[in-house]
Image (cartoon, rainbow, N blue to C red; front, side):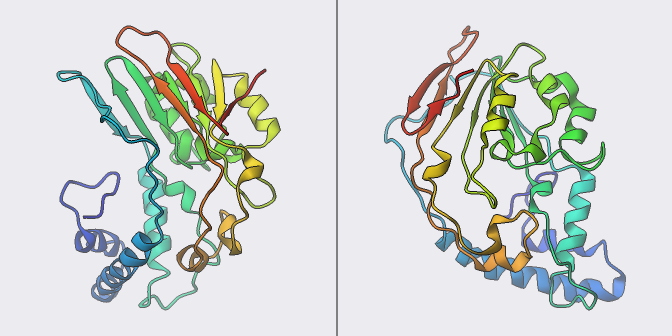
Length: 273
């Protein structure tokens, strides 16, 4: 089953196709549904083939204690971001006869997840950017949730990119005290992320900051997949090389702990002021 933020349980590829096609004139809906079903079916097998699975450590499953209260909320994409994505995706399908967009900003469709377990909260920020207005991106999350997104631990958004660094969001996540944060490196176009100046900026707003690998240790990726606004076909047809040189940053908290215990596995490292 396809899982998409904001859709009811049980939505599969045909239901998703119908939802997207409902935004089109009646004369185009039938052919568009067929196109969407065909495309999702064709992409499923190549996508699974190109996923590299790695087991970091074998052991017992970590899960909340029986009876613990927990919630996992998807804070994005907003309705406006979803509508923009639907409108853009439809223009790439075979039945569309208009001008095909030159680029596709995939980051505005990212799902930011907020996990709360027994008083501890974790923000998994994905690659969501700030947003062009208060109904999109991080601006929309802050507008509607505010201090409700206070977090003990933050996975920094978009590899520490400036396009995802939204100070009102940091103020909201730190509403109950400065969080502990970690950021993952990425071999972005024009230089690896995170960059030194952004690490220094983020460090000012958190209790601790760790990076899960050395940015320069990541191999170059191929084609235009490096660009956020790359043509859609470069995402579909260009397979990145495996990401090597990654470590691990482990956060653990027990009931009653005020801050997490952090364990670093090299080449992960801590950003010192």
